[in-house]
Image (cartoon, rainbow, N blue to C red; front, side, top):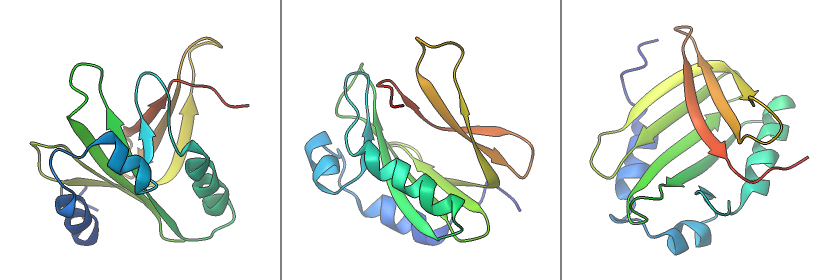
Length: 137
């Protein structure tokens, strides 16, 4: 699969979000919201992982906010269609791009470092899904 081609349904959904996409709106829309201080709705991400492990199709939106500009959001959709993962990413100033793969991985350098979730793409690359700064056991 050519991972530079965007997934049309995902692109339409991400492009329909307002710009700027305020953090309060993302939280109210049940997005998994990731920022440097507190994640919101992270339980939805773990529900997604559980569903995927059971082979149940699921889709979530993950919105990342940086510390430099809380107005700028990196909007993403992560979907498991029952067979493989589709991850589409779009910024406030960038067009959507989709990646396809069959495995999500978790990496931590040590116990005090953030948890990083990656999609292992069919091309053999790893695409960062998000970094979770608050830890869960």
